[in-house]
Image (tube, rainbow, N blue to C red; front, side):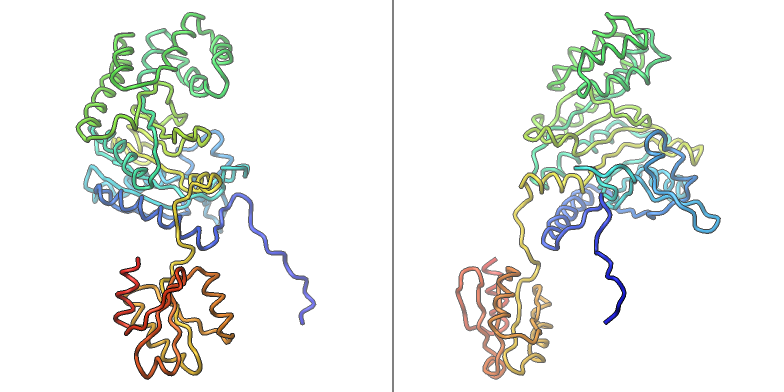
Length: 438
């Protein structure tokens, strides 16, 4: 025996690791999201996890800079991707001459952020993104298409959501109309966190920016407007004739008309002026989807319009709109709240258990059954009783015990492990019975 000290097995905090039966659920959720994306004509794209630091950090800033995993290999400065949007920007800039626009792509993959690991925050997590990128221009109907896609994805996941939709030009334009053009970003930063800090603290911070008391009230009252699209539009459409503001109103009206034409249920979305989204690259429509029964989950999907996606990498104008689902966080929230969908704890449909010297016959049978279902052979050198216990523990729904009589007669005793029922059938009839029972 080696005298070397054993290393205690452990994993880094902030990295999700699931048992196989939960991984099956996560894989099924990914499959459903992928199917919705592809059904609506979005094409798959997979970009490298590692990028040149110069590329990946071009659009970053603030806290993101501190969270990016960065290292050198030789003379090459490398970063691990922290989202899927920047790699998309790099890809469309590199391949603009070969891409057919509008370019509709989806990407499902892991991203990495070296932030403080805590409940609901991961250092490695799966994002499920879908974006539409145009060349020179992109019609507003693309915004509505992404909003409708959000609705369909969560319907496929059997989760009831309420999508909070707004347009950044509303508050941008209102700030301009009040004479605060030079303070727009600072004002929006405060308004963006009003639900966290409260109205009084927001007013206090606005006053520090030399915003007049009356203007503070007007800005906050506008930010807090939320409700049915038609009603809120009536309330805000004539607050100012500022061009930026009216552009936001016009775009919201257009989005609303397209959502209506697409048949998106109005119970599933509202107009919420307080949706600002902190990332400065958003330029128009913005949205955040939430699960009304669990407001503590906060945003489960977000996104919006960005009119200069690839500006750091090309002179071409490439406006886009997209959505992103943080699937690892969503899965964890559902798991912690016992909301995961019904699941099988195994993907095995049938297990063959050899009795006596019949392992080779079982392997031949496995080849037949595997063409129709997921079939496993228990080839461990253990007692029959222990093999049956193992099949029960794994929740395998069907077993066939293969002994010498079964090899000779070609008739097999198929047992339903859940009900205890048993049938003597040919191998073809076994397959038929398994599918009937499903």
